[in-house]
Image (cartoon, rainbow, N blue to C red):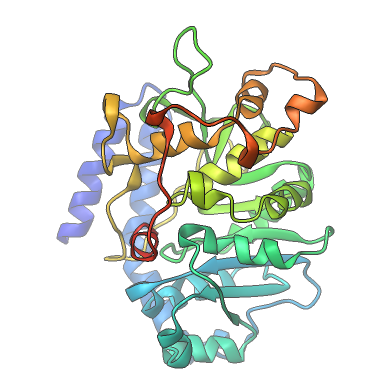
Length: 348
C-alpha cells in the first residue's frame, strides 16, 4: 500500500469516527474504493489517445448544457485529465469552454489541450477574476435561458454519470441551484449572524431548502434566473468575496430566493488529481474571534435580505430585492479588501 492510499485511509477513518450517522463506514468503503481506483483511472485518461476518445467529440450538438471551467499556473498542464473525465461521460455538453487568463499558456498550449481543442473544446481568453473565472465570463457573455450552465473544478476526476446527474436533478428542480455536495447554514444562537463555516452541517436530503449552501468543487448547475442575477451584479464580487466564488453565488441565490438542492441524498466527493492542491481557504488566515478567511468573506457578502430569506423571514419586495453591491457597509470585522492580481492568482 503506497503512502498516499495509507494517508487517505487514516483521514477517512478519522472522519468516519467523528460522525454520528450510521452510514459513515459505508461511505468510508465507497470513498476508499474510488481512491484505490484513481491510479488506474488516471492512466486511462492519460493514454486516452489510444482509445475511442481520441476521435470522439467532447460535445454533443443536441445538448443544451454549457460546461465552464478555468485553470491557472501548473494546473493548466493537468486540466486535460479533468476535461477527459467529463468528455468520456454518459452525457456530453453542447458547449465545453476552458477559460484561461495567461497569455503564455494561450500561445503555447500543452499538446493534450490542443488535441482536445480539435475535438470541440473551446479555449477562451478571460480577464483574471480569481476563482470566479470558472463561471463569470460565461455568465457575462450571456447564455440562452433554455440552456443549463454547469461549472467544474480543474483538479477533479469526475465519474461517467456526473453531468447526467446534474442535468437530471436540474430537470427535476429547474429553479434551483443544484450541487453534488451541500452544507446547511448554522446561525449563532439568538442572532441573525451566520456561525463560522466549521459549524455548518452536511446535508442528507435531495429536497431543496433555502438554508442550504452549494459547494462548487464537485460540480454545480445554475438555473437561468440565478445566471441573470449574477450577470446584473457584474464584478461586485471582487469587493466582498474575491477568493471564494461559492460564497458569492450562494449569497446572490439566497437574496433572490433561489434555493439549493443536492443531487443525491448523500453528498458525493470525487477524487482529486494528485499534487494539485493548495492550502484550503477555510483554514487560511485566521482572523479576529477565530474567523477564517471564508468566514470574513461570508460576513462581508450576505445582505440582510439574504440572511432573512435563509432564516425563512419574508421581506417586503423593496427590501427583498436589495442588491448586494448597494447594501449598507459592514463593521470592520466583516470587510475584505480587494486583492492584487498576484493574490487573486494565488487564491484559486
